[in-house]
Image (cartoon, rainbow, N blue to C red; front, side, top):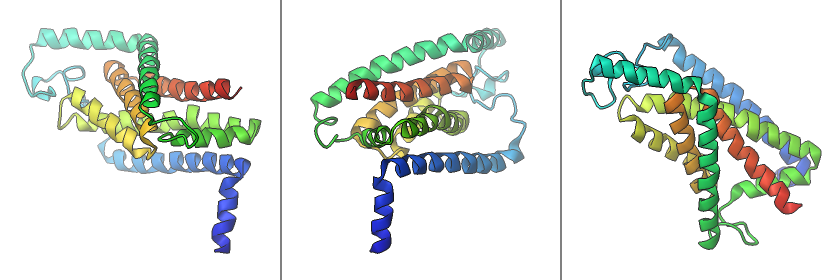
Length: 239
């Protein structure tokens, strides 16, 4: 009982909590990267067509739908894919704008439906984390930004968009893979209803921009922009 009380006091202290939050993210990132690296090492280098659709494959049998496509059509699609990759920043910008608009609409609906807000912040576990970080002062805010705007987007995009999404395209069309990876991404955070619905929208946006550009940097930028915007809005609201 004494140990439980001491641990609770540590987690209740904003400064200690922000340090634990950052340390846990660093450990997760390092250990996760090691596990993923060991798991993927036997398969390197990945063959052309690893992302199982016509965008990255010269062979018709590698289409996600298993249908033949003419060589001219494949070349045209490949060229379009290369052009989108070169415009990754623009693709990410459009995705960020779409994400913020959709999340704003979703958030408004959640407040109206009583699934977010109020004294208990129903369905919004992220609010408690942000509040504790801000209560710890500049040190806590710095830890929060490092964790949510840098480490989390990098690690989670490698896992969910770099690894999971392409792996799912071996069994289903890319559009279904984007949707399923977004659902898993949202649910695995184990947040309340409000956060989960928002994360679903973010996951779809990140999946779409990665599928279109094949540039993880673009999806990381979308992810980081959303997390940063949530923190900025909280700061403005409390100010």
